[in-house]
Image (cartoon, rainbow over all chains, first blue to last red; front, side):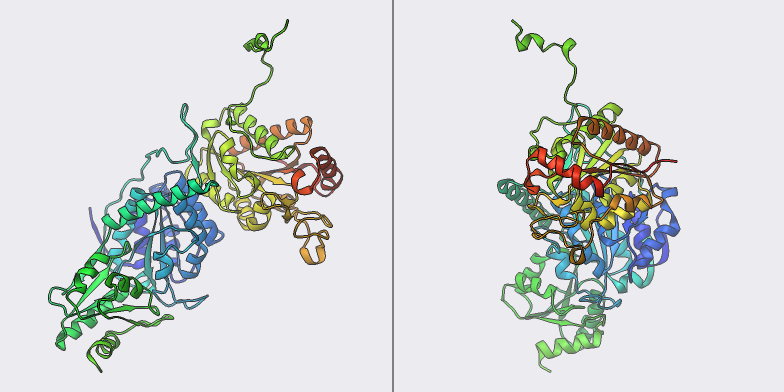
Length: 355
Length: 255
């Protein structure tokens, strides 16, 4: 039975992981996402579903524990916030290279460095362009609501196993900390499926399983890269998700994701009231990026404004999609500051209407 | 006349290669202790009949390709992270036998945190620690366990402990932690020592079955290539210089 609850984003995320049939969570406390591990510890799913919860000694250890569990074909998840996500990049590169499934959550805060504990979207590049060393991609899901957070946890595990690739839920401190009404999906039982790629003990008559990201022969390592790239093309073909708002008659377009997408939606409504025909696209997957819909709208609108809680990151992907055909501008607040709908409307008028 | 083919009969068999080692040719340098250590661990797994229940974790270092040689399921970890990877495996598959195989740079420098915390949690797996006081694969740089005044490519005038720190006795360090159950230091440079370490491996794997806590077995070993010695010279140098600082024997045994 579906269940309706009022929940904090971080707690809802943890509950969703338990219900998604996750086998293990390994994490390390960091603001603004410590409620995730606290919720797990309080709920004690080990007794209910057998899900393992462990507080690791570091972010590095946590992601490597995920690597170990994922290599056994188990549904493993970790979460952190920006500085901690930087520490996980080594592990993510290995997991992507070894082609293992896992889910990583970033409740983003402002940077660089220790930055601030306030929300931000300044880890966009790190999330969508790889983050660690080597040519690899994470599948990146960007929830804008607590409900999407819950739904994406389930989706993230599905995508991770479908492509045997790490999936990141790129959220932020706003969505992690706020409370909203949320409909929880029913408990999915933990799977006891034994995958032939998993290290679960050598089967009689079968070759032993080796999980590695090392190929000393360059010809072989190039093949690994080609295989990964072929996989990413499939992801790009199949998994793009976005929401559109009033794009049918739009003369201008806003592009914004996550919490910023919600604020921008209000700005769009205010612009419409002032007579500007503005539409909006809210990417729900940041990798794969919704290139095709942006290309399509490019022929129709006079200009695009991206709104981001950073100094201009996603705007580069929008510009790539647009290929110089129309002006693409960026408006951002950063360092933990959140843009208001008024500011966004002002920025739009200044950049496109002429203040 | 006695021909070899007449002698190759089951009734004449006195010794054979364990099935827990694959037929792949080892890449290790002649005289290096890795090969013997691999074999003794593989024989221990074989004799306990747990080949299908064992999962190993290879490090970064000379034994990075250990996953080709042990005929058990194997994972390659990032440098120093093997105990964290092993923790992830053991926590989701608590009934399997798990071991890490790590060198001194991997375990006692870049992976010190993972090593100490896995031991402190008393994770139920075996850590095999090869200590030859040098970074082998990268070409002979100073390791955390390099002896005082010992030369390496990054301590060309010998390790000066005033500026380069002291050689780290990681086994004594983790033996102090309540999470470790059995910590023992060995070598594999003589048949007697090789037999002894196999007994230690078997004991450690049996303790793992009983969920007694972390077992760490250190192997004081040689590096003929980077010590720039013949295998025999390196073994002699090891006995004369390594053993006094890293004495062989049990460091922590079950009460």
